[in-house]
Image (cartoon, rainbow, N blue to C red; front, side):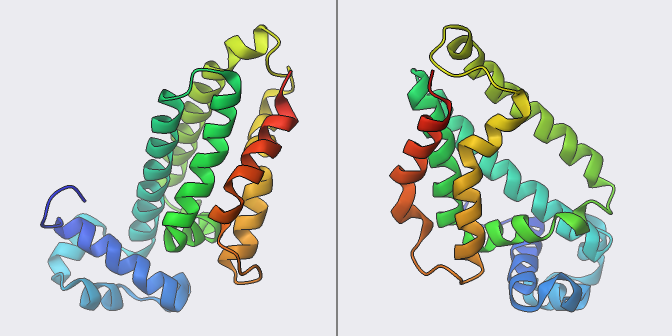
Length: 194
């Protein structure tokens, strides 16, 4: 947070993440989140209503943070290679810096899909993907990147890092994903360079 004092809503989301990390979504109750956040019952229901709404808000917030960081790196890129690597870097950096949120995002989509936020989340994802693709389109048209089916670029640019993130976040791989940042970025560029 940029301010010294967190908002009550943010305190609730932070408490929810801690509870979801420790107990899982199914094992967490609204009361556990309320106790950990110090919020009143009224405040909990004013901001969210139920546990699923809290999970959805946390999911949306987490993805928004990732997308903002991705956009920041893309804004600094000029060449096709820099843009491709920025995409891989953004994924690796965000997962490494936010392992609890990344774990939550990777393993909680099914819960969010059952909430009212699902349609909005899908819309935001499409808008983000379209903006990234529009950035790449001039490079594709100029032959600096391969022209491939649109839907596979994400898999090629972040798929290997995503697969490793699942291993690392589950504890099956011990080395922090950030240690392989350049390897994933080079693999992404090798996959799509023209």
